[in-house]
Length: 606
Picture: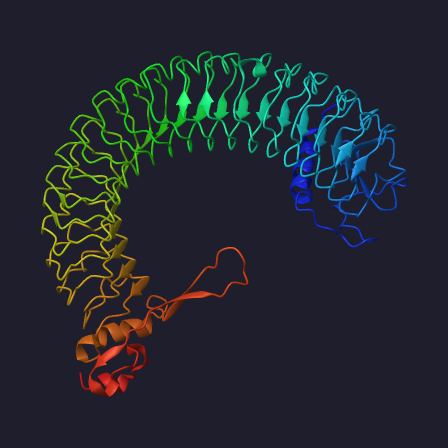
């Protein structure tokens, strides 16, 4: 019998707690749960409680240094927790009086062996947790006495083999987790009799092949995880008898070849992950019949090219990841048939050029990642047809120039990432046709100047990142179109001054970074700034800096001396501070002082 909904929620919560295996000193008990009523027949080393809504008894004997199951567990017990003990061996008939037991947790209890009759009497058992133990083998008939079992967890043991038919007496099993063991070979009849199985986990073993008969009879299987094994190829006929399979994880293997038709018959498949393998080529008949596929991950392989019409049958594909391969060029019709695609990643390949029209047909793509290639340039209207694209990644792509109309045809683009290139020049029309752009990242390029009209038409821009360039000056009216800019980063440039009124139109500006430039003076505008970074400039703390001094004194939170970065992980880590020193280099009488430490008398003569 299954636990009630409330009981299942409690089970999931406590499994998470128990998996940590907190060991309590002998003779002590964990804090009782709110509202628990102790059972008069509870074993002395355990804690017993009744569920509020069903009066079902749970017995908690977790982390009690037990070397054998405790005696005297009440016969009406529905859930028994024996995790994080030192049981070692489970003898025959260890639980024979618990005929109503629904849930048994033995995880992390150093169990090395189960007698064939260890589970005798547990005909009502629904959930069995044996993970994180030391099991090397399981005798035939181990589960013969648990015909109602629905979930069986055996992951993180030391199983090196399985006997054929081991699970044949479990027709109601839904979930079987055999992950992270030492299985190198599975017998043809390993899963015989599991006609109701929905989820099978084989990840983290040593499997080098999967034979055609292995999954025979698993017509109800919906999720198969064979990732992190040593699979070298996918043969035809192995997966074809899984008509209801929806998710297939094969990542982190050694797969070098995929046989034509390897996925035939998987008409319900929605998710296929082949990333982190050694696949070198794909063919027109690699993915036939996968009409329902939504996600295809092929990143981190050794693909050198993509043949036309490789994805022609994947009409409903929404995500295609091809990053970290060796793709050198994209031919016409490469993406034919992918009219519903929303995410396309081609980052960290060996692409050197993009031909106009290569992305035609991808009318629904919203995110495209081309970063980490080495593109010679971007032709005009190379992205034509991508009317719904909202995020375009071109970081680290060896770009030297951005021509006029490069991004024409992208009326919905909101985020454009061009950082870590070698851009020295941008045409003043290179950003035309981007009325919805919210974020523009040009960090870490080689820009020494910007065309005066570059930002025309970017009225909705909120984030403008220009740090780590070579900018020496900005035209006085250059930022006039950017009245919605919220964040402006001009750090690590060569700015000697900011033209009067340059920042005045930016009424919504809240974060301004000017550190590591050559600024000697600054008038702080607009007044709504919430954070102003000014360190590492040669400030002349004369009369020209009086307005900045007054602003910093009135708004110490906007111009902080230091900000502590939130430590990640362990709270005991040494705090990391970012300093915002405004150090005077002149006049000589105040050189070396922080501007904020100067008194009113210093500016009295101004």
